Length: 292
Image (cartoon, rainbow, N blue to C red; front, side):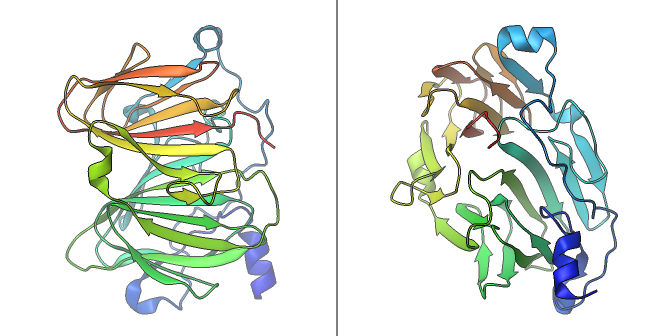
């Protein structure tokens, strides 16, 4: 298969190939996760009457799709690869929220993406990245990595270490522009700046705090002590907010959430959050609700 056909087969970043760090140049498709993501429109998800009335959707951790490939364990909040749920296609422009564990010394071999904003947030361990733009990097907890796939890129991700696993969140957001020039960025943030408050880690503005993407989206992370309350004001009228509890528990707009629960809410301008356990870590995504 030539490179052009290989990229075409991997439309919208669907190609996932298992490899060891020692065989980075060898493509070995060991898992059946190579189907392209569906092209979606604004009417793809049909919420039930209760969800529409409350302008919210709850995704419990135990309700997510799950895949165990030995070297890779992945929980899918939204439909992905062999997990398909017509009620879990996207939340606004948020298309993928994968909670991944990669075994020691293993990883994703060279594979293509296009026309997607891809954000990686390491939670534990060291993730090594290489791509067709010539970037080589290692991302760790406290780092945020972003790729604008645009007209097409190829990249690989490996667990750098042979003695510990890697845990990371991989998030895909539909861009507001197609076929942009591919781009890579990575930053290290001061995690102390998110104690009992939200720290912005992503926005649409290159001059703003954190990394940036081609979309009206703002991501924040916060680490909260038990009982701490905070109010979040939505950045842009019409945006929705998707909350993902990385650890601990919280009450968000009256909804009780536990570890790895997800909760989306829209048609609001402000949201009240209260940590209900110690060491609660939250990822908050303020997102355009309209697919461009």
